[in-house]
Image 1: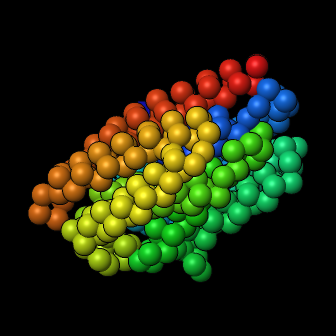
Image 2: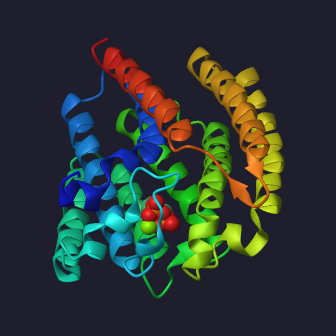
Amino acid sequence: MKSKHIRLLRPIAWITFLYPFSVGFGLGVTSDSNPLHVIFAFIAFIFWMSFCFVLNAVGDKDVDKFHNGRSKDMNLAYQPLVTGEVTEKKALYLSIMFFIFSLLFAWLVNSLFFLLILIVDVLGYIYSMPPTRFKTKPIGDILCNTLAGGAIFIAGLSIGGTNMNPLAILGVFIVASNFYIPTVITDHEFDKKAGLTTSAVFFGPKKLLQMMYLLTAIAVIIWLIVFLINNLELKVLALLVIIYIIAFTLASNAKLKEERLNIHENWILVPFALMSAAFVIYGILKLLG
Ligand code: GPP
Ligand code: MG
């Protein structure tokens, strides 16, 4: 089994947010950008994710034991807080340290980047921890992830500061909410057993999946406009997004059997990891001129 700290931090699951961050970085960076800023930004990202996942494990310590290993980077029943390998006190100390370091490194990048990391830190907190614990509130769960996905994309863009296109940013928010929906539906059975009223539990898997059609339609309109009126970089991104979101929405809806959505985690993690790698390499090439 993986070490307790890897199980606590769940770095494989970070890929979901690495993707918007990398795309932002790749589009925003220029040959004039400071390579040190890029390094600090990625370190801040790592601390932000560590902060979110430790807090999430603390908030979920009484429900993760119900998990059966389906559709996730790990079986949450082996969370070190569930097994008792890590105490809640230690996890909270770690989270405070991660929070401070995320802000410290973000401060070294630029003030907009700092503000955005502060915002995503707050979103991570209110998503997982009481009194808000938005992950248990219908719409609240989707909204937190949408805002975090969009904000971390803007943070990525802000490292280099170019391609700060409002319409593309709006499009990323819509895409983020669309991509989050199947992940909360795959948790439906587990969350229901744990007594959590997530969006999937509240609306039911079928209705929530249908919401993806509406979001996809809005996203396609926005990205078509982005395609028509922007430079080559945004045109390529727009094409990728349009093809991918349509395929993802159709595939997700086709995979619902009864109340159960059987999507293997690699359906999301592998393409996201490949796209993240592509955009990071693209960004580094731009940085090197
Ligand atoms: C944990 O996933 C998810 C996070 C830590 C995301 C952080 C959210 C932000 C809004 C920044 P999980 O697989 O444990 O699922 P759940 O969300 O149900 O706890
Ligand atoms: Mg959790």
